[in-house]
Every structure is written in C-alpha cells, then in structure tokens.
Amino acid sequence: KACDTSRADPVVEPMPVADATINAWKAEGLAGGTLTGNQSVNYAGATMGPKKIVGDLNVSGGGTLRVSGTLWVTGNVTISGGAHVRSNDPAKSFAIVTDGRVTLSGGASIDGASNSHILLVSTNNHASAAISISGGANDTAVYAANGGVTVTGGASIKAAAAQRLYISGGANVVYDPEMASLNLTAGTGGASAGTNIKSWRESQ
Image (cartoon, rainbow, N blue to C red):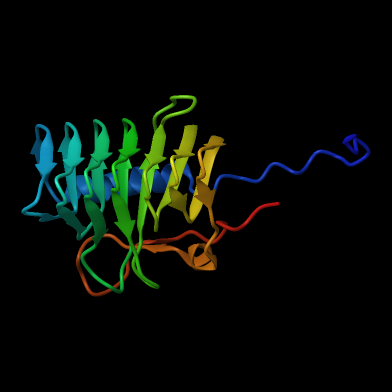
C-alpha cells in the first residue's frame, strides 16, 4: 500500500551504553587477571571472571560457562553445540565484552532469570555480523555499537542495540521490560559496583 510520507523521521535514539562504560568493563576484566591464548569450555563446564582473555572464547559440547565477573575477550566469542552461558550468581548480571565477533549457534543459549542476565557486547564494526545469533538462543541481550546484529533460524532474543539489525528465518526479538533496569555488576563482591543501563527500552 502507499506510504504515508507526511510524518517526520523518528528521532535518533542514543545508544544505551557509552564508550566510557565499555572501557570501564574492560578495566574490570583486566583487574581480574589475564588468560593468554584461546579458552575452551566443553562438557565439563567452567566458572570464569572477572578476566581478560587474549584470544578467543569458545563454549561448546553441551558445556555451561558460569560467568562470575566481567569478561573481556580480545578475539571472537563462539557459543555452540547446545552450550549454555549464565551468571554464577542469581542476583547479579554481567557483561561479556569482545573486540571480535560473537556467534551463537547450534542450540546454544544464554540462560537468565529476573535479576541475573548476561549482556553480550561486541565493539567490532562488521556491518552484519558483529553479533550473529541462530538456532534457538533465548534469554539474550546484545549490543553492537559499531556493527550489525543478525538474528535468524528460529532464534529469540530479548533486547538488541546496534547500528543495523537483521531478522530473518522465523527469528524473534521479544522485548522484556526487565531489560529496562539491567544492572551489570563487576566482580564477585557483595556490593554492586556495576552499571545500571537506564535508557534501554522498547522503541517504536
């Protein structure tokens, strides 16, 4: 049908996370120590964070990565083969920040609860695949300030902010109001020293 061109262009919304915040998360990961070389989590599972990983992070083989603090990955993050990633604390949320690309596939999922989520952040500038999600990912919130996010193959995510967003193949972005007060905590201490993303909200 004919388009109504009488309405003004929508106001550009600011990105919900400042570069300074991402740099602070990286500093939190670095403060927890550095792991040099690619890190793999398989069926045995692992608990990790806060840490800086100089290399790739791979979670596969049905294994579960329990995140106990901010993770800064200089390479790529790949979660596949029925793997799970979740917070190690039911009352805290954490960020995984990568300078590379994020790929979720093969039934991999990010598991969350009311006060416990994982935010996947890529600073990569790939136009369509800074973050790629397919194959049933669920409680996932993603952020690619410089690149694109592709959601396909029946995947369902809860929140996304990116330069470009591509949705196809039965995928869904089903906004969860809990994401409006996503509180990201550093480290494993008792007090929250993290960041409250106040501007993450559903957009028309």
